[in-house]
Image (cartoon, rainbow, N blue to C red; front, side, top):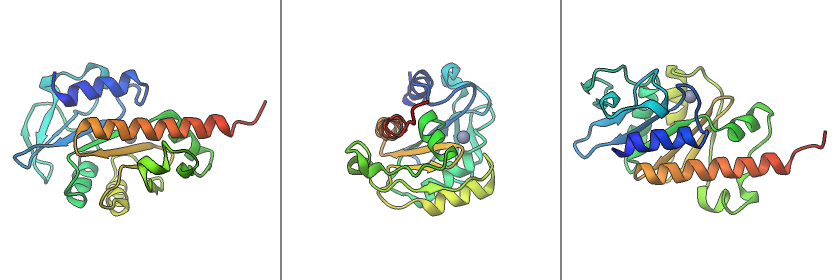
Length: 186
Ligand SMILES: [Zn+2]
């Protein structure tokens, strides 16, 4: 099983996406990118569904429709030459905190500030929009591990899919702790 299929299933099993949410990609050695298809639940993605695109988003290989967030991924790769993998997911606690307007102060816990560094929050734009792609690319900086998309989800970065996955897991763990730690008793 390829990494992109393996991590697609893993983020679904961990509850970081439901239905057909989220998208994963990786930069290949030849300069092209593998990305997950649109519309297929991450739990059910098969090797044959993975699409290869060039830096302009033109399909090089595959018959499925590339993710609706392909331009966001490609814009982030262009902005981050040292990043080789991107996972966009909808982790519940990270997203819930932005719905509640709670600032996610990751410096409160080691898992957050020390390991993730500065995690920028991008204001809401519709999923799949050029505005979202542009806002995400302009919030990216060299060395970034993750960013939050307000009222939408999160993006995690890595030198490979494993490191991107770990950054996603750390962000959601920190957000879950902050969420539980700030719960008001009913
Ligand atoms: Zn999304």
